[in-house]
Length: 370
Ligand code: IPM
Ligand code: MG
Image (spheres, rainbow, N blue to C red):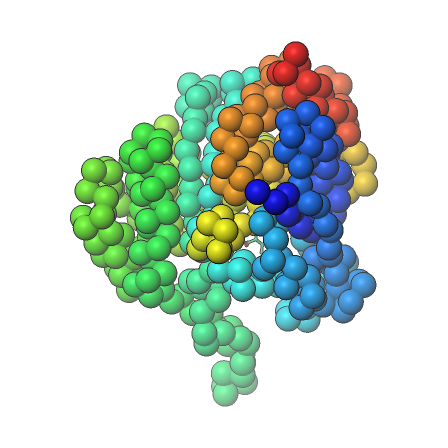
């Protein structure tokens, strides 16, 4: 098989810093595991706006469509707050998701044992936590028409967004969730607001249809998304796979991230339909944002971005064992007490910097083959 291709879009803020550490890990796999990648780079977000006046050029979009997987850092920052909506950094990311049709966004929330005391919740609530949020990523209120800000003809204005879901959009993301559940604890909880939204009623009916007709062996439950948020904080271990829409998934996954101790820990995979080579269209990115407050200070935690590469090994390149090797290396480094600033508990201690964390993970990879 030819060398798989990776497009790195490091983006803004801490994106380039954390991606630098991922590069060390990629190089390690090439040098030590015979896993080489054809790596190219491009611009997205504010970095692309600065260079080209747009958060994503057509040329970069075309390259993203062409590679086996895209690795993305983060987009956005205060310098771009006043830009017109159509050229904001976030539009670059949303265009990638939409045009690559990456409908299933996998956001695992796993609590590493070494960090169980660091969560804002009690140890017994989060220790051993391992849940997977599957967020619909290409539709719903993020993309629905009509949208915009208009005069309301009474001297004021009106802001409009539209929540819209079709049968096919709901069924395909539901299938992704049921497939994942079969490889985990075989439980799916679907979240919507069927009590107040028609799109929520349709969501519940279509998820149920997929379950009854294609996955009757998987246990399915339904929850209103607000109650789901409450249950995530009360007793998150009741969940295995959660499937939900684009906006609820955005919010619930940030909440789930905090259960694990730090937003700096959470990776994600955004997957679409299989390409001609059988691999899914795919983009991997940390759940955290560009963190402008700590940009350039060496404080960023590269683990979420490194674990996103582990997801790429698993979901794009069929290297589940190598993905587990990388996850175990992260676990070993955390168990050794190494902490970036975001992972220091109230008791404090001396943090290591971004690059030291990357080096520690590479050393743990070395140890795994000795
Ligand atoms: C996320 C982010 C994005 C979103 C932003 C950066 C557009 O919050 O990936 O969760 O809202 O989807
Ligand atoms: Mg978000």
